Amino acid sequence: MSNASYKIAVLTGDGIAPEVMAEARKVLDIIEKKFDTTFNYDEQLVGGAAIDATGQALPAETLAACEKADAILFGSVGGPKWESLPPAEQPERAALLPLRKHFGLFANLRPSICFPSLTQASPVKEDRIEGGFDVLCVRELTGGLYFGEPKEIRTEDGEQVAIDTMVYKASEIERIARIAFKAAQGRDGRLTSIDKANVLQNGVLWRQVVEQVAKDFPDVKLDHLYVDNAAMQLVARPKTFDVVLAENLFGDILSDEMAMITGSLGMLSSASLGESKGDGLYFGMFEPSGGTAPDIAGQGIANPVAQILSVAMMLRFSFGMNEAADAIDAAVKATIDAGYRTGDIYSGDEGTQKVGTVEMGDAICSQLS
Ligand code: NAD
Image 1 (cartoon, helix red, strand yellow):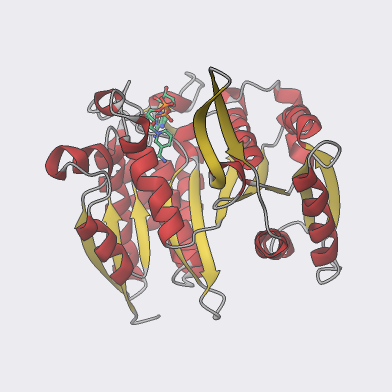
Image 2 (cartoon, rainbow, N blue to C red):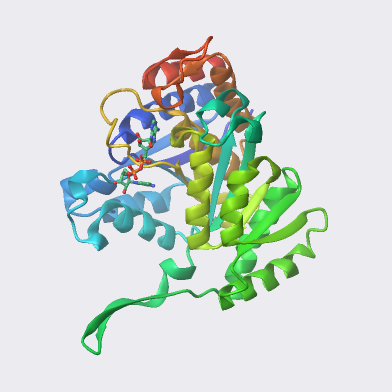
């Protein structure tokens, strides 16, 4: 029993985000009672909803609330309504990237879990994923091509030229590698580092630094894959991977690939962490891996599991409430095992029933209590 109190900045977002966030809040209400904890919520606008209300995707008030919080619980942002805005003003780019940069959220952890009872939802042949799989993708989030300068489109010799710059400091590689090695220690003790050392100088340095960090983690078995090979191997034999470490661009693509082969984006959560506060806990932003699913928004059929599992990650990484996080993970698994399925994971199997967002949330809450 903790008697602790935490301040959570709740940035709900667009599309299905309000629907799935409501279910995540129900889960938090139960955790509060069960684990004698107080959560103080500061709800703020973000993304398209914030653009409509204030003209900005990340209003100053929202940022100020995040600064005062112990963690940020984030819903997804964006949708067709804002796609015609100039790229720099669009919800994802104008809210997510500045938040990551402002809080130095350099580590993105995305568990790709395919539950044994959901293997039929995966596009990968069942014999390759029998019994499910559980791969943790660790992606560097604040360096590389997405942030390197110069970054521009300019005119040279009468034609347009686009320039993006890939740049990594050894210290940036080292800090993300340490998080990945630590994560591997708490799991199956295996780490696959991804690079393109055969072509990119960034890859050469990446591999050198990861090898160096590995000396501090002799209990973790390290191997390396070139990114093009990794893209194939992850689909061909996902069960054989434990933790996968990649720089920003490669991690973006590979973690989406891994999300896809689990069968549903609606099941996957994500944590973006900054430097450790020294006590093994991190300030972080916790959100679903998927987007705002405009195709199903407002219909009450979105899968709330990703948002609920993002709550579990917040409890684990920012508040050190491992027992509560385990309880949520177990409640989700029990709900799936009991046959509850939202549309995205429903395939009509015997013993399963199709439910909506609220019923799925209620089923998880009743398992939890
Ligand atoms: P998406 O993840 O929103 O949707 C892809 C597919 O997955 C859709 O068929 C959708 O219905 C389904 N899906 C996703 N989450 C689901 C859930 N919880 N339950 C059931 N089905 C779910 O990706 P997209 O269509 O490429 O993007 C839609 C919008 O979301 C865009 O505006 C994009 O910019 C934004 N987006 C935001 C974030 C973020 O805020 N972190 C991430 C990705 C995309």
